[in-house]
Image (cartoon, rainbow, N blue to C red):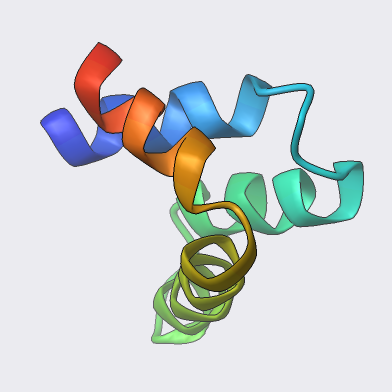
Amino acid sequence: MRAIRAVRILARDGRIPRPLRWLVVVGLLPVPGPFDEAVLLVAAGILFVFYRGPMREAWRTA
């Protein structure tokens, strides 16, 4: 549950570029198959490398 809340916070964070936030939102959609998981893994990798600070804040807030 904490991870889902953190992703929701990141999807609304204004410091993260809009296309990356849209990737996070698409990854949260209940799409059958591995598509949504693959999108979340790509978005998580980009967030981890370039937006580590906002990710930490979202995790603490959640």
